[in-house]
Amino acid sequence: MTDVTVIIAVSEEWGSLPRQLQALADQVDPPDFEVLLADSGCRRDLSGLVKGWQERLDIREVDATARPGDGYARNVATSFATGDVVMFTGTDVAVSSDWIRRGIDAGRGAVVFTGADSDESVAVRASGNFGVSRLAMIAAGGFDASLSGKDADDDLLHRLAEGGHSVTRVPGMTVVPASVAGPERGALSARVRGFFTQRSPGAGPDVGAGLDAATSDLPSVSVVIPHYGEVSPTMEVVGDLMTQDGVDSVEIIVSDDCSPVPFPDGDGWEVVRSTVNGGYGAACNRGAATASGDFVLFLNSDVTVGHDFLRRFLAAAKPWGRAITAPAVRQADHPAPVARFWGKPHQYIANWATPGARFHGQEWFDRLQGQDVTSVKAATRSGRGVAVDWVAGVAHMMPLEDFRAVGGFDEDYFMYCEEMDLHRRLHEERGLKAVYLPQVEIGHVGGGSSSTDRVRSWNVDGQFRFFDKWGGTRRFLAGMVATSVLNAGWNVVKKARGADVDPAETFSDEWSTIMHGWQHRGDTGPQRAASRRAGP
Figure 1 (tube, rainbow, N blue to C red):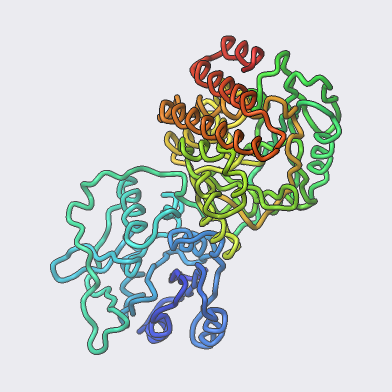
Figure 2: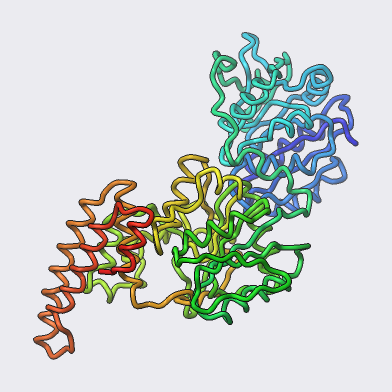
């Protein structure tokens, strides 16, 4: 084991990294040390640079491209580190000639240390100049992967301080801007007086993401499949899950939602049954109640997954730690909208407008309906995950502990909008992100678990309930009614031109659907179940 691991996160451009490596190679009387360059999406030939320095430095490149941010990149590098002490510096500075020697001398008696100016102010700037015991850093949870630069440093140092590890200032342990020629200058000092009196925000769900990157271990997962209707589609999904490559075991739970064709018991899966048809959320809750994995994956019964789907999905989700994750979905040979913005009334009103049907599939209209087109395009280009507001529920995974902590799905949704409601509560109450993972894709038939006769009514019911909980229900009502009037006028014109359409009947159906959602938006329990049976 080496004495010190020097970690440098390298983003799109490596800046003055060659000069920094020269400064590390010229260290005076250093202990045994290694240099780890954490590749966080560098667009230059970082591997070639590393090879060019391997005769003078014990240097390696580690892949930290699974998600953006140098907080994550430094966690990944720490997981591969062999030094007792890890020291962090950057690509925009050059360390002093005795930087490592001064650091290790301090590190033998201090858990966390940084350079100091002549006025003794703490010198932490853009990860350029501090070190910490590797074991103490891991015990503190590592960096918050959602943060970068000084924000990530401050967060980690807060948590170390709350654990009783104060920062030791080391005079002479300095760095200089790599673009500045001439004599070395003092440490780059971010004056954070009051640093030790500020309250830490506490460990969020991104703390420590990447610290397990050096291991190939994947978290355990319970897959919950709501079942209603024909057995064969669900059985195909179960069969595909039972023969997955690259995973030791998977817990498969089929939640039979009082299906007219019951799902059979069998070896390799568990069936939980309901005596009433409670809808998607209720079925998922029953399945999750018996789950035992670290994560729970809710999977529709009408999907197609590859032989290595779980291995690839769990590996893609791993860098994001405690998060809600979803793969890309292909439906009818087209990408399905998975990454979404939080629901706003105008999104569903736009979808309600009959004249808008011609614009489906156009980017501007997809955005208007709440699809996060920009994030999807960026994720597809980069081939790595991207955080969004929420993800569609065809396949979505989350930590089981967090799912249970927020009470699971709101069972007063029958179908549609319940996953958006769940993801919002997980975000607001537990701090979880929703992450779209484009590097993994599944197929989706659509309509595999229920009849389409009342799909529109369930959609509108769910939308009214969501806005009743989160605000905007009266704007939604007014917009839906106004849009139905617009639709009626549009249909009158179409009928006059010979189209086979009944404007009065269509308006009556739309009005009934809207009023049903409005009148029953606050129903709960048995009252809401009765309103579903009655229909609009």
